[in-house]
Image (cartoon, rainbow, N blue to C red):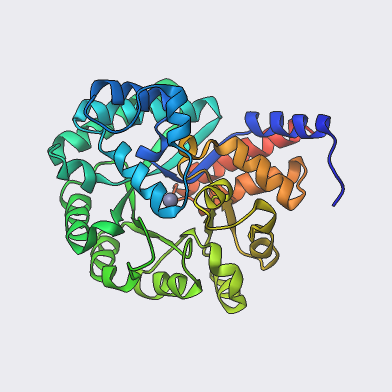
Length: 347
Ligand SMILES: [Zn+2]
């Protein structure tokens, strides 16, 4: 691989920063920037999360995936009332707009908040208020994926399904499954995905991030997955890659997250190229950006380096996210045209 000059890298970074983008795999609480987390921690002093931004950077250094989940849940614990929810959501959209993210499907775990005592209607009103304000003020369109926190078991699946069906906010488009995969088999969640899909929600479980390809097959066979969160281990199974490519089932790849959680040892070993070479529709995402010291622009730069992409290649990745999104066709065409116009103007 030829080394890019520093000037080329800077110019590609500027191109990426200005490019209109869509993001499909990014978590609500996991998008809380150190500033927002520090504010929430200061409001809730009994929390174990430090309120000082420098101490937070240290706090957000993970030893392994289990430690990441532990830290993540301590931040979840800071979201205690509807105002916390509204502020967090609105501020996330502000950060997205600064990166020229025009559309994002934000994964929310309403179970955690409702369990904490925030009434479901107040929770839904808070995210919807933030969504409408963000669209009007920042021009960033938000949609929701409600996900089951796998570590909380079937009771959380029942509650999440009920929230998605009986309290569905206007922006809800999909139903997911997150948390640890080891010891949390996907098939047990089939009844809840069946119900959510019957109600018109799209199926987007995490699978194959910390476990092998069997989990991804389970997500496809039992949960009707229409996109796969991460799907990192798909690269180990050529038949699975061929299946994903044939069915045009996208992968939501989050390179820096995979390193931070030790799902992949080094970026150089990341299987993104194997996925692309197999013809899979790959999208690039940030997962829990401030927690992993990244953002979507950085993830595009990482992908560009690993895949040796030029500007047109980067724009093609951005179009993948539009294609893989749950936007309606007219909105897809509009954002894809925006990306094309941007890329052509910069040639
Ligand atoms: Zn995720």
